[in-house]
Amino acid sequence: MKWEEIEHELISLRKELHKYPELSNKEKKTAERILAYAEKYKPDEIITDIGGNGLAVIFNSNQEGSTVLIRCELDALPIEEENEFDYKSQVEGVSHKCGHDGHMAIVSGLIPLLSENKIDKGKVVLLYQPAEETGEGAEQILSDEKFKNINPDYVFALHNLPGFEKNKIIIKENEFASASKGLIIKLFGKTSHAAEPEKGVTPSLAVSELIQRLVELPQKNKFDEFTLVTIIHAKIGERAFGTTPGYAELMATLRSYKNEDMNELQKKAEKIIDEVSLQNNLKYKIEYVEEFPSTVNDKFCVEVIQKSAEENYLPIEEIKNPFRWSEDFGHFTQKYKGALFGLGSGVDQPQLHNPDYDFPDEIILTGTKMFYSIVKNVLED
Ligand SMILES: [Zn+2]
Ligand SMILES: [Zn+2]
Image (cartoon, rainbow, N blue to C red; front, side, top):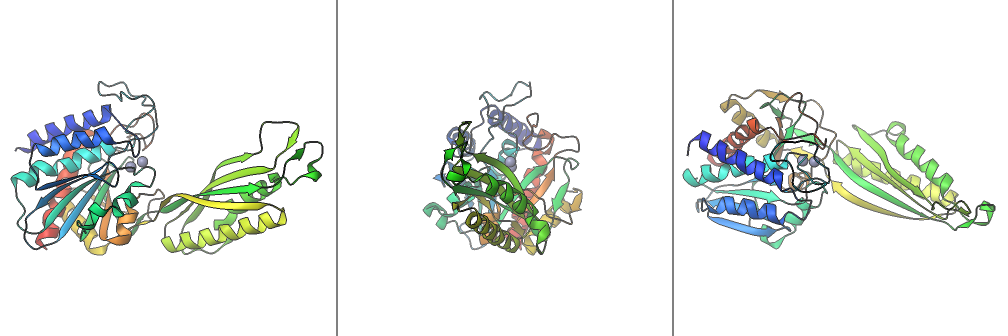
């Protein structure tokens, strides 16, 4: 197949995926569309329903060698699309605003390539992972029995990056994307009449103190590198003007470049919650949700990405600091040697998760060529 033919196919696949987006862990039809595309090219093996709605398309040389896994994401976001093109999202309130439609098209480009050009060593696994946006999907995959046999030697993924020129490759060794986790604090006191707050136990002052102390935590303590606490939600009592509240909830996102700092940040936040609750006679409960470890890029894998970018005459930018956002690909790099790299999607491109964002089709083939080079470079090493 000629590059133009592949590109043509991938663009129409991308637009089809864009038109019918599905939320995290509801990506059944999306996986079916990919399955239909993959089956045309008769890969050696296809594993369906892996880690939920996940799909693995496998090319196996049946010869010794490394197993390289390339991962992309199936899910869209609960955001109403503001664009008016003919492939506009047909699902109310849901759209591909992170470019996962583009990532899927990029990885799917490897299907015709690897079916026409058989690998002579090792194995290539194209993994379409569910529920990236909620931080659940990677773990679902990693804990699935069906994944046990795959056991990759190397894992790779990319994310398109608005704000960087189209087709630029963005790399960094070690931490590439931050660790983050959602913290939910539940405070239990006792309601009383609004005229007699002293007869109950109200959490309102504790909430205000917690907001202050949690936000200041990164500045008031020593961490190795960047840490951040963002308050994202607070609720005290009900809309009842006759009642002093007896219950409150506070939610914050903890964030850090390094996994070690995240552990420290968590410990220190818990100590503050314990102190403030005790002082205010409150009982409390702590929960964590949407946990993302930082994505840590392996040295060899970054070298492979660099070499692959050079082979494709692509500009490379090495960033100094990790990105502040998180990627659940961090669960993969915690277990396997791997790397996530950025693919510039345009300086003027709307930012990820913006309602007017749309993945630029001009970078699909660049992504496919990058992964194809990466696969060849790793297998030939
Ligand atoms: Zn996203
Ligand atoms: Zn994304």
